[in-house]
Image (tube, rainbow, N blue to C red):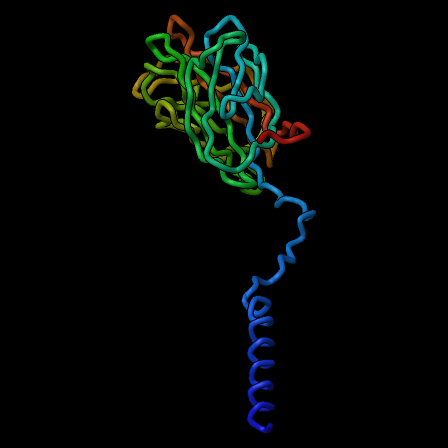
Length: 242
């Protein structure tokens, strides 16, 4: 009888172990909150300058999505928020199905950029992206910044009207540079490297201490230089882009 009792007890224990085994091996329940909001994306701030020679307005695309429509020649947009990531930035003449030019760029979070569309010496469109520094001019100074997209022009310099010495020099094509200067009213001259003649005169600017004055130098179809003055106090458009 004792042997049968022991056998029965062992059988009960074995059956219990088999029943519990699937529970022990089953995966832990998923406690993830399915209703949690997606992680917020960080953004860069981007503005566009139409320095092309196109008579029609142009559209700006971000990864095939139109984000800035119908910007007329020599116009500058406000800053808008673009997702901080690598993007294909495209420029198209308004109404065109295919991009005139594209540029692949990585945009960093919380940084500002100026995208400039222009025409090269052979007439084909180009695009350049410039990082806008957040640093302020030195105390009591104003800052002049030159963006050079005039294909065919050598290094450019900025001079006060009639001055021998430059305020800013050695700015190469597809590049930008800046210098801090004394505030006050100034008429500026753009001269090509090594030349004393004035390639372009910029009418009087009232330079205020603590402010930055950005000037884009582009070229017309006849390769004469023209200037587009940017308002570096522009605000940010509401909403974000991708």
